[in-house]
Length: 203
Image 1: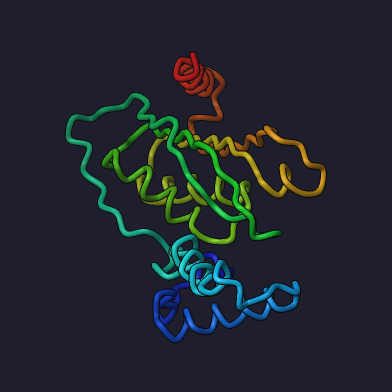
Image 2: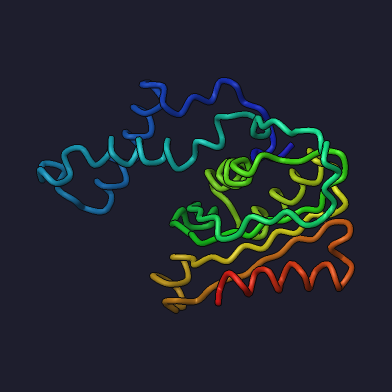
């Protein structure tokens, strides 16, 4: 079972003893870099980094999936529901540096609908862990498809990766776009409606 999908109730990233262990590893890295830990600017860096990791990776400690509530589609709404420009921050699993951007999520309901605030909740859960953009896109689409059993789902994520911008090829401003499609969105007219709505947000 993948570390991204297993339930680990014991993983409390804010537990003092866990923060202490993370901080100790950070101190080791700082020493190996030849930094002076007596420098007042570095005095609490190990603890700050430990707490930052606890915040950035909190999706790992919440279990296998976010807890959300879906509602019956009593109005029998059958057109597209779309939430655009949802901001997110994540950490690249390859280099542990940030990548960030916006997600655009849509589904066409059958019997269940999702509270609008839950789009961001789902995205946040899967983003707050060492992550790949491709995997993040698939995980969000899989979750929506499984929880809502809709006619279809489409997820598009646009992100900038600091592992591309500040190291390696060093290409500031490069944007990576990924998409995931389920169900009726494989039909070209439905997919084009999604893309048309997305372009309107950028106009």
